[in-house]
Picture 1 (cartoon, rainbow, N blue to C red):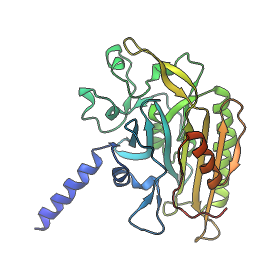
Picture 2: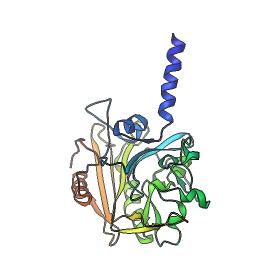
Picture 3: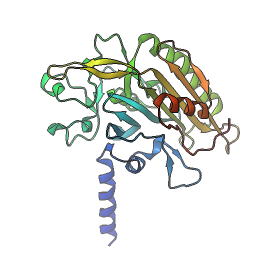
Picture 4: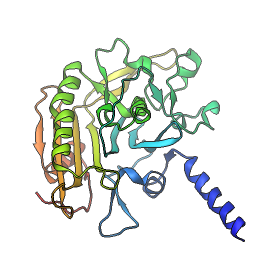
Length: 297
């Protein structure tokens, strides 16, 4: 009987780890819960940022080197993330990668059906032709836009996690100026605030959500038989928010948010409530980064 129970348990666990692209928020919670804040009012629940209705929005438990690295809600029509959610618990000594990846489970390609984690972005003409729900590496070449990380390598705690951020489902077009200023004025500043104010270890991770707001400009899709003028949306804004346990008062929380418009690049430092209000207006529908979580201003 014990052996049968163990077999059933392992079977259930295996079925959980075989799917990276899920179809509901409940599956999202089930497959990659560690990247979202536990609900303080319900220990069996976690708090997930708003997921917009519609088949174009796909939830991805980003898997690389046999482990889940972060979570993304991806827009397959605009071919950019809505946001990526990740945690930060320690500084990592990581290197940049030149290997750009894609999520095979977003595509209806026979050879991709059994792929269980991100793969290298294809370069052969026949395969590229069939990549329709996401960008591939050649789409960004000679475009005058950089591949802007949503979950940045700067917050990766290991080299494997750093490599996982180089998937094009975690990327949105960003001008070189915007990319550099976002790193300088937001990513580095936020990491400094976290190190100064947050309790940092595996038992008390910092929960971070970073996303983009769709804009009115587009990059075209490239590749024979795949050309499309409105291929990859160029975001009007990038935004980020974090929530952590107070370093001095373990029962308290600290949270902060940032948003910047790409074109003029004027960073705003906000409360979570103020960010939610701005994003609701910009998205044209209700949006909350940490819905239901009580935060002090």
